[in-house]
Amino acid sequence: MGNIGYRFNPKYWGKGFATESLLAVVEFIFTKTEMKRLNANADVRNTASNRVLEKCGFIKEGTVRQGKMVSVYCDYNIYGLLYDDILNKGMIK
Image (cartoon, rainbow, N blue to C red):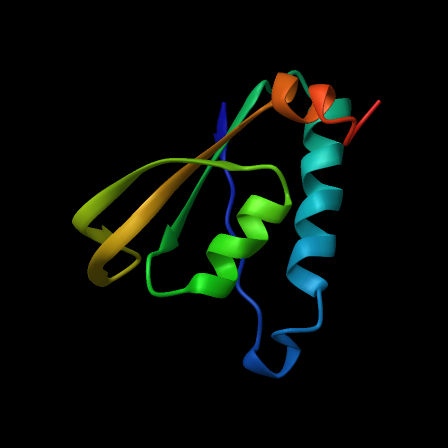
């Protein structure tokens, strides 16, 4: 089990780089390692990041109220992705 996260310079937002990169990393992790689960968090206000996680197969598992992400207190969503989830969706072989 591991945690995954990403940050992009604002000039690269909205160009699909986050989705493309995350899909490549997820595929690598699940095909080249023994990891069976990935966790990710996204600020509830960051709808674009939440959407990226969902497009990459992550499932929202809950919301932390007034938790701390990096150095900011905020509400954030908890996402999880299992190897079996993406195998069943045909996202990897």
